[in-house]
Image (cartoon, rainbow, N blue to C red; front, side, top):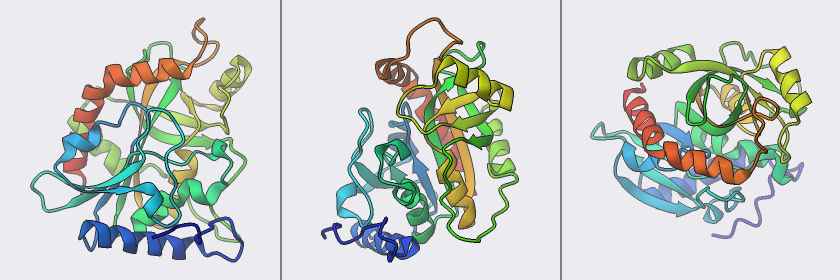
Length: 278
């Protein structure tokens, strides 16, 4: 199926209708009438899909309405339907995400989350690689997201639709994660627009505002998830100390290297958490 006719940024297009069409294609290609949990795998989290259970179907992103091939090195170009152990439940695993800095607009950024809801999911797990503001959080540290600060100057919610985002990152899901690993830290994630890394002054600003982590994703997706009623679990992998915290220059290669070094541990952690999710 060609997806060229599904222009999410056309004002005449209903993004929720495109999500329904995408979910229908996923159901057809996977043979599953519904999925239970969706995962968005950011930098350092790619192997998690293999540890959750058997991959039952793989779909090229470009074959699903509203989706695009991944634009970032280290991310997959496919989505998978994965058995969650022997529970009889299924996870919809996205190997990449659309970032706001790609210039496609907000609707494509949150399309995967809306599609997950249309596919039957009740929970979405958002993962990312990020910069850390706490010097004690060395590269490779995993941190639960307790809240976020959205500095993208955008929202996925359109019109006079007022959504309560108190406890946006579902407390009971964070409790489940801490049952799996009681050593998990928590922090506030600050989403910048990107694609340039944050300046030292911006990092200081983020810290003054109450941030602990800085990155270029996740916040907009979480807002869209709450709008449709999904429970949200956010987990960050600190891939580098943020600008000004470390005297080392920032690079995407460093992000990839840190993600590779922590890949096994992140994959095992996430798989164990997903098996316990309601």
